Image: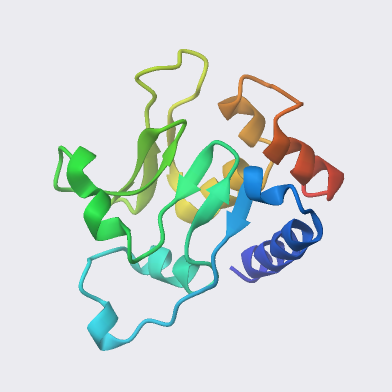
Length: 153
């Protein structure tokens, strides 16, 4: 988890240096959980992530901030999941039981299905080389170019 904290800090600093970054990336400030904030049930791992950053935009990936999550559950069809973001405007879920990120594209044939823990999803897809798999290996994608130019991939 410490590696993720360092990555988020470095990415956030990189985004602040680029005036065009608002077009492809933004990291929201972390939140501190208190008893009264814990109304919407999320996994403990997800809580820890929100204490590092409270959602954001990462190219084709959006991760909801905690305050928005309760209003974004209209695409959930199985109560063992909750929606915590989207990829290419399709819902991105966390499974309450396995604690894994679950994604399966209904629109795009070349986009891989995802089923892995949240930290690995962030490490490989949001901040890593597997992001390219989500954009059909488009090395000109703005988020990927940012990651590459800042030596995150």
